[in-house]
Amino acid sequence: MDILIIADDLSGAADCAIPFARAAHRTAVALHPLHPDLDADGLTLSIDADTRRLDGDEAAARTRAIYTARRRAGQRLYKKIDSTLRGHWAAEVAALRPLAGTAIVAPAYPALGRTVSGGCVYVGGRALADTELWKLEHEHRPAAIGAQLLEAGLTAESLDADLLHDDPEALSARIEAAASRGVDAVVVDTRTEHALRALALATASSRGGFFWVGSGGLAREIAALLPSRPAHEEPGLQPSTGPTLVLVGSLSAVTDRQCAVLQESGRVRQLVVPPSVLRQGPLHAEWQSLHACIGELLATGTDLLLRIGREQGLDPSEGALLAAALARLVGPHFARTAALIATGGETARAMLVEAGIDSLDLVAELQAGVAAGRPRHGRAHRPFIVTKAGGFGDEHALYAAWSRLRPAP
Image (cartoon, rainbow, N blue to C red; front, side, top):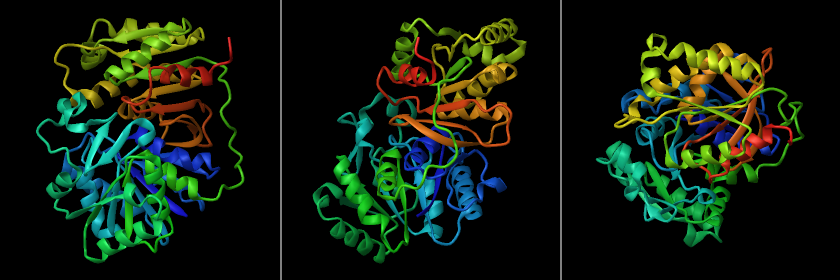
């Protein structure tokens, strides 16, 4: 099956694509869609459209342009969205609808506590609308999936996959019936991995006329249905022989706990960069001293945890600006790293752009939602690149990723 994945941020692009790499499919993540090296036959391609920071109209136009540029005959489209509905996903789906058919919307990721019931997302059993994350970024928007699709001008019907999880053929017939009635989107309730697997079975062998809209959860089930291919020549994950840089742009409480556990190992040095330094850049009095300190630590082989600090009233919309400044602070020293672990899609993308890396070959999944890759061939400096969404994982997630990259003490 020829699959094109379009995501709205880098960590999501990698998270959605890594199940295909696990099945030994050649899998790449790209920051730019038109690179000629990405036209190889048999390549599962995941593109970071980088639309989360744009407004809705710009996000929709960019997503449509990427799909128009990359689509080919016989290809299936997977529109990757955030499992907590961040970004302009509904506008992007609306832009794809005339080109790709009916949208099958299933953002659930039960393995990470994200489920869909009654057309609404639940996080750890709690309604998305009641979570701090939603209130912080989207308090004045409707949280129901159907309501967001309606705002984007799409008609939607609901379908409960849990009720039909033992009958994929009936599930497929219900989806095809909705599509034949001209419904723009089918919103699928999925509370269990069993239901998500049934949805994958019901749609993977379908005649087409639709595209998937989901998080990494549904992508994992689709990839599991594909026959594994012979392993390609890219070496797997090996312990790095130089310093590991852990770059953290996420300000979530989950990330705070993960950083604390990593610090407890006693083998990683932490530096916290105040947002005020990043806003002013080289004009700030502390910029040069921080820049020099980062260089000294990496030059001596020290593993470094570099974080954006907290401050009262920090605006979440500053994320891209702060991430880009953090990457500039590190940029001249990046060639000394043997591995990068980046938490937050904006942070990961900013560092790769600063380092001149525009695509990755995925090589391993360290744990659910944590993907490892290497810059594609032709580069002298090919560190391992690990991406993780900011709000995902238990408190040991960063430590587990870091320890996979380091020789045992």
